[in-house]
Length: 155
Ligand SMILES: [Zn+2]
Image 1 (cartoon, rainbow, N blue to C red):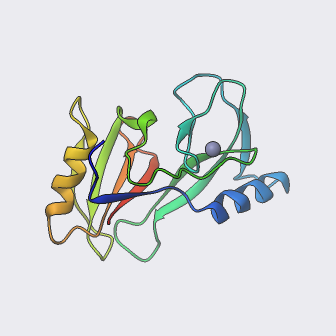
Image 2 (cartoon, rainbow, N blue to C red):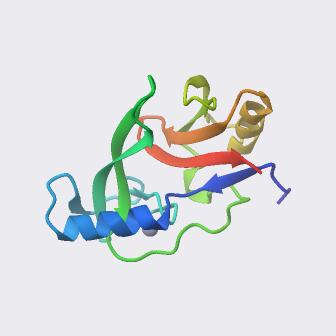
Image 3 (spheres, rainbow, N blue to C red):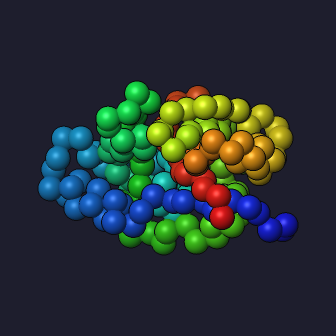
């Protein structure tokens, strides 16, 4: 594995813990669902597909904060049970090599470019987007559902 010039940023553990507490409290926008397919329930904390039968929390997350034109809040999953935050931050997560779009943003959270991972290596697209001096970070999202998956920053 060649060393990368980027760092994978999974969902913060604090956000996953808050989502678990909020779901237990019965909040209507934090729903517990049971994964019923092998590639439909990506956990943003451990960056794995949930196995069928695993309980997941579905809740809204603002990957792009309010107060910006590209502000965006959307549904994400985390495991309902404690899981280990993705730790191989210098490696692109193996479960998400397909079906993602890479969106580049500048420091003001404006989207400046986007490219679908379509058979090519996601690392090559990430490196190309990060070569633009104005790129502040890249977000990986579902190409079909649009949901935020994880962030990528320069090393
Ligand atoms: Zn997980």
